[in-house]
Image (spheres, rainbow, N blue to C red):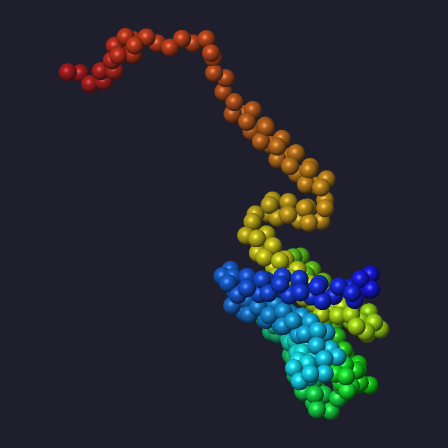
Length: 294
């Protein structure tokens, strides 16, 4: 499986870039989201698109000793690390928005502010690493080489995502399922991918998983909005379809059909077919009774 991803990862990246770019456009033109939530989702999708474009350029120009390759490899690798941190910032904004609105919190949790502080520290260290080789460096053939302190670049985003995950788990009972579960998925899948990628160099599992989860996040946000706009019965139907509970869905539909059948029987009026229509003379010769004396 890993060999397949390694061989075709540039093609996979190109497909994900296209999907995430379209998703970014849809978020941009959406008029149903609140301003703060639209901004957070737009940043998630935009940063994810830039992340994967940069990662693809980094692989494309790796080993290119030309002047263009020199700058493209350095700019692309910087953007990969920068966008990874930026996505955690955007998710922090989204988490803050849903906790303050759907979660019903009156004050922002201290963990969201601490996450923003870690995001700032991560960006400062990333800028320092561009001049000191703290995270990575390049050899004479323009290939990327990890530095001894490369682990720091993993630790900071991981801590931020774990903090956000703890917030969602703590307040998940106050959130709708289609709002909490996508965030949990968004935060856990890249963490698993980062663990695998730390021991497997040459595969962008983290970046591809982040972009894939960003697309799924937007799709489920739209689904959550549709479910919220529907009634309770329609919502149960959607949850039954999503969970694969076809038995519950079939029983509910059978109950609905039984109710409709009983209603139709209760209002059924038999119409005799043996009645002959009256003659035209009888129709026109009928006169209303006189209510008032003349």
